[in-house]
Length: 119
Image (cartoon, rainbow, N blue to C red; front, side, top):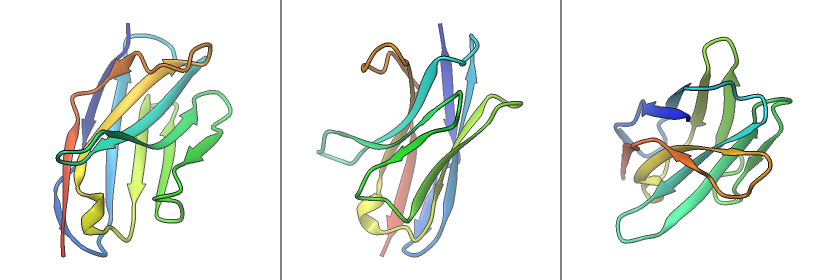
C-alpha cells in the first residue's frame, strides 16, 4: 500500500511560480512511476508529468513543457512539481499518483491540492 499527501498549492498571480510537494509512504518505490495530474473545474483529469523512481527518467505533457518540471528526493521520499510562469489555464486541483512500472494504471492517489492562478 502506498500513501500520498500533496501540499504547496495556493492562490497566485499569472507569471508566478509554485512548487507542489508529495510525500510518499507505505513501501519502497524502486519499481514505481510517480505522476502528477490535474483536474480543472468541469474537465477531466489531465496528465501533467511523470518520473521513474529508479533512474529519474521524466515525461512532461506538451501543455506545460518548458514551464513545469518534476523531480524527486530519494532520501525524503518526496516528489515535487515545480511550476513556473503560471497561467490562469493552470488553475486546477493537482494530484500526486503512483503506479507500478509493470502496469499503466495509477493505483494510488493523493487527495489533491488546489492551485488557482489569477489574471
